[in-house]
Length: 446
Image (cartoon, rainbow, N blue to C red; front, side):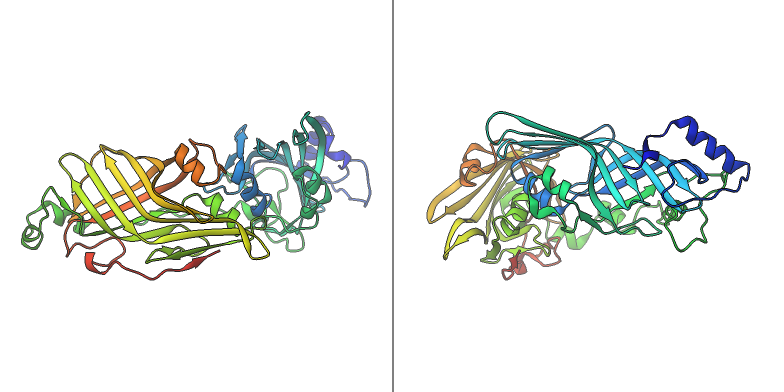
């Protein structure tokens, strides 16, 4: 790690003052003293996911925990470290930034806990570094390995400092637990200033006309614009408040049989990624009218049947379609072969169950309760003869854990469930089709 990383704040202040006074300085290659004019930087953020396949691996059996202001994007996404401070070298046009926040990757199943702190980006060294602590319990007794300023990745630095390509180092492979990571492409890196300055700085600042080297000021230009939408209510919304002859003519009863409907559910994002990833090397297949969103996305099960009672806030709906997860193939035999079909969702006052017929490696079970459901609200309200309940929290049950081969413990949060059911044949479901036309062909993901 360059010596200037650990220099005193007094020295940094001195060179910044010299820059403010317009002093002419010269950078000499290999110099070990502060000879370049440096400008203080603050309020930067660094976003990096390390490597998506690594996040999928950890997320399958373990957890990521952020602290100290660091955050993780939804869906097991990238990590953001905050409050970046450092310097800009006006001669070499490079930045050196240190960020706040910590990240813990932990998997009891695999016996490791890895902590990253003091994440840094140095554009001159073209590197991401961090202080790393790894506790390995895979062999029984804990073995702890620690390192300061460990180089985790090299960076293909760009002037904008957005979506920069990264390559993982041998040290990263050592700490992350696999030599295969060394030299592998990491996730893209973005370094931006969170709050642009409102007035020009008194000291020399990174020039917007520099093109040969990265310039922090390039990331200071905000691209967000005020919203242009009108605050007035949409005319289509006010139409529902008045009497409508066409709506009242087909208004459904407060209780009865479901005409059709759809259930959207991804099971669990990390499970889908695991099945199609480099460990299981498998595939995900839908059939019987079920579909899968592009990019190994969530599933939609269709052709609902069942009953509803909006007065009692009760709903029971069964759906057609199946999804199969297959992986860990050896000589034509699969160690993972799991099919979920005939999904059924029940809600009573906002709480309920999600069940399915389960076939695992040729052994079938009917009506297995996979998850406990909890809606955001206990009310079931029909609009235009359609009941829609989105974002229903799903929590794995003990029976569900067994169905998944104990990959996850009971109580694990699964992907949220989205429900839409039509109460009449002419009701229009959210996908644009009427109740009589919601069928579809299967697709393949992964």
